[in-house]
Image (cartoon, rainbow over all chains, first blue to last red; front, top):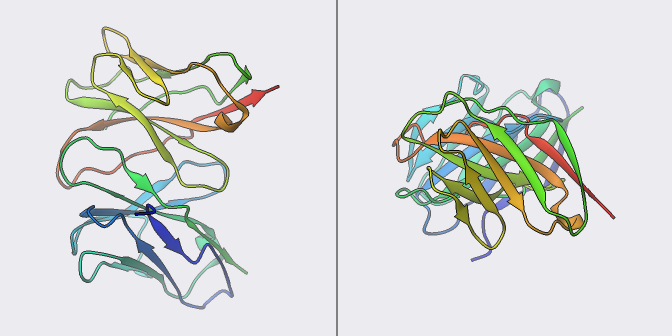
Length: 114
Length: 113
């Protein structure tokens, strides 16, 4: 297992377009998280899945954002009608559901909205 | 989850120990201290965590004061590859839905020759 995989690594899109990112977590991890990180700031929590259930969403996740984890494995994060303020690094993390194990993060998808 | 306070930046000479402090004066009895680091253009990497006892692993040591209001992450022999932003995070363990990490702005550690 090579860890948490995120695709694409980079995405440049025009304002108003829709974009979708994919995260493949570590296979035995049932918890999956999405974070957003802007320049000079720490990552900010967006949403969290336990298996296929989306259990928590941040206020940062506006109506234009939607995340899915249909079979409890990979997850997608879609942003509709992108705005320049959506430009950021989008990070995915996974972990075991029990115990105090650390989270394993992917390398992120860097989104630039022009 | 309790808030943490870290210095904005620190420098360390290669080969020397890097001691990164963190204040978490409002920590609760069931909150753990976690440390992550983020090397440029990568996702955060888990380093170590602890509740009240000092902890050591292959990457670092974590020293937590007796009153648990502060902690220090120690990289015993810093190398250039340890240059990164280091995040100290306090989090309640095994809280079910409330299991997210809340990051601050961290400490930017620069290791120099």
